[in-house]
Amino acid sequence: MDISVIIPVFNGGRKIRRCVRALKQQETRRAYEIIIVDDGSTDGCLRWIQGNGIRIFRQANQGPAAARNLGVQKARGRIVLFTDADCEPVEDWIEQMVRPLEDHSISGVKGSYLTRQRKVVSRFVQLEYEGKYEKMKRDCHIDFIDTYAAGFVKKDFLAAGQYDTRFPTASVEDQEFSFRMWKKGYRMVFNPGARVYHTHSPTVWNYMKKKFRIGFWKALVLKKHPEKLVRDSHTPQSLKLEMVFATLFLISLSLWPIRADFLFYGLFPLAAFMATITPCVLKLFRKAPGVALCSPFLFFARAGCLSLGLMAGTVKLCVSNGNRGTDMAYATKQTGETP
Image 1: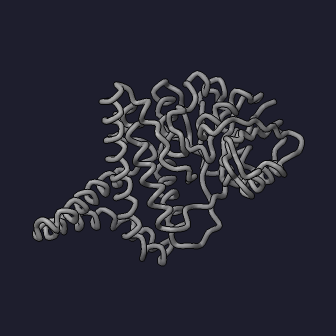
Image 2 (image 1 turned 90 degrees about the horizontal axis):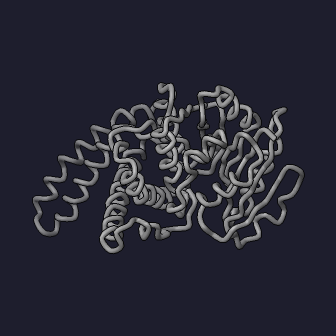
Image 3 (image 1 turned 90 degrees about the vertical axis):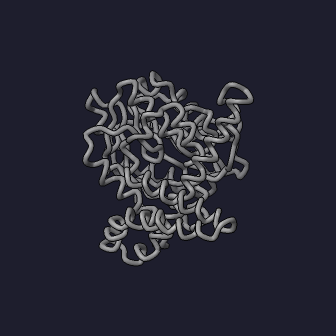
């Protein structure tokens, strides 16, 4: 067996069926198996999943990190590929994922998102990813692989220590693992041709919740990898400025009832925020004018929720460390929502 494709699922409903159907229709001559790890689902989502080459394992609900680790432990392939239950890989996804790993100096590969959605928020999310892809294309190697389209040499994945199960939800456990692989000297690359269709957050509220959760768990990532506060291959440097300016504006707004002139002071970080996002907004106008018109609000929602989540996560981490002298108490489940 050359390849094991691993899919964690928790109450995946119809989504997992579309994912499996896409994987069974792959155009490849390579031998591969499909491993589904049921993370304590209660909706009977695997009742209709069957067929040769599909292996199903079950565990009590522990989160996607633990589910993926179990999948790797059961995998027969030399290469392990990950995707999510709500993704539909295109016909040549396996070929595109495996090809860079034929270079024995490469231990990991990252693919890219596609979407069929037309709603403004979903289109914004897709364009947000595409902006990051443009950044990654300029790098020979990357330090971050998302699990929606991730591939690793199995022995290197195990040697790096697998996903940290202290991350109980789908958030930034893939970031933390990728940073760890990078620090251990393993090399990873981006292949934009390894594509999967995905259903992005369709509403502003869902988008804001997702960004808050990412910020919350990023506190633990930065505790383990503080050097990544400066730079990583996934995060635009401009986003850090946006977070600072959005936070200063929100602080000024919250102090406005105490002193009216704080609202005036808040205009300065707001103006700086608008200046920072202007190049991105102009770029969006060339691709999707309708999305660009709404983008300043969405950019602010992104920056504000990431900042608030990061602050909440940092406070939680400090309190946990103070009470118990460890960050194990930090692993308190915040939400069961998948991104």
